[in-house]
Length: 159
Image (cartoon, rainbow, N blue to C red; front, side, top):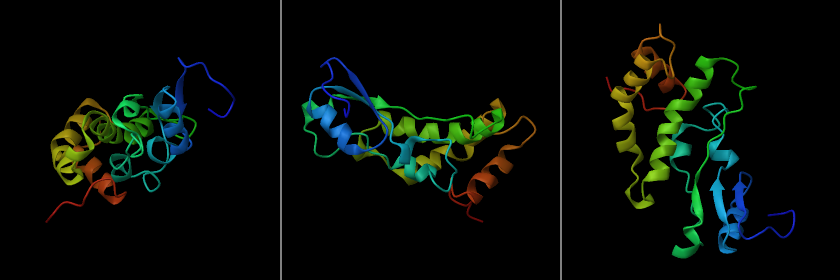
């Protein structure tokens, strides 16, 4: 978008600001939304907690219905130089991708973060742990849930 006149058939990948997302869609170009501050999942949990990813809105409010159709979807990014092990990649990827999928596939008016969390735990975390995603094979699901709670990725269990 900044490099000059793009062919109308160009698909724009936006990671740095919403103004480019809006400009591309308003110009009739398709967009893949991949904002650094919301969708870079190699960032520490403190910087991009699951609640922040869930709050992502890939369709700018200033787009009309026809312009909004140019938002093709979302892309999350995980740069492995920041996550050097498979376990680290899994731990940073899978819980947040569940949140991203719900954002991508659910109308904004129907998204409900507390409901999402209630559906994630304990069943989805258990499923991830049992398949080896977001936890090593020897790490029990309740330990994974405790670690995620400590990082603020999920709400603490009610005692």
